[in-house]
Image (cartoon, rainbow, N blue to C red; front, side, top):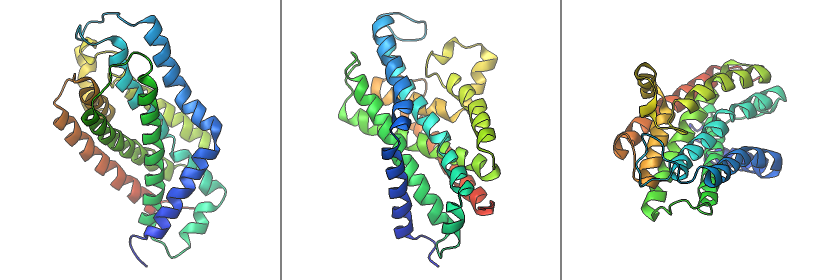
Length: 256
């Protein structure tokens, strides 16, 4: 049995894409909130000065990378739900008994989820251009796409870790909600992290999303806390750890 079966990977990738494109409610639900948030803030808070944001950067421009990161976070973390449903309805049992390695199964699902989350992030970026957002450079968009990729990998891996250890969909959703909001609030997506109390600010250093949002902001707005390369190195390292742990937990999980 091959360790990496590209036919199986491409088949599972295609399955994830078809499921996404057929679920219109999922598309609307995932993209509706960030797009409406950007539209609301572009009308109501454009020109508002907030401590910690340079004068030359409008709040809506500051917010846009955070909305992209938040969209990817929510979508990536909840990708684990499809794993639970597949196990519930016996699909996982069917593919596990085929002569395909589990790493190929994981890669197929991960690549599908990464493609979906990156499409969503790019849609948010495209929509933002119609809301008086500063137009980024081509190089900036390419850097942003790289950060979107690693944010997706990181939180898809984290979602897979929890999904591999759980069997209850409702319980999984509760755990994900419990984890998502601290990650989102401590990422600097909505407000500058410098305004946080010092004890709370130090917790942001262990939040992978913070490096992702900071890197997106550096790529698109040329404003960040850390150098762009440092954000990328930290996020890439965390993504590797998460996807390896997720694959290991899936390997040890029961698929029936």
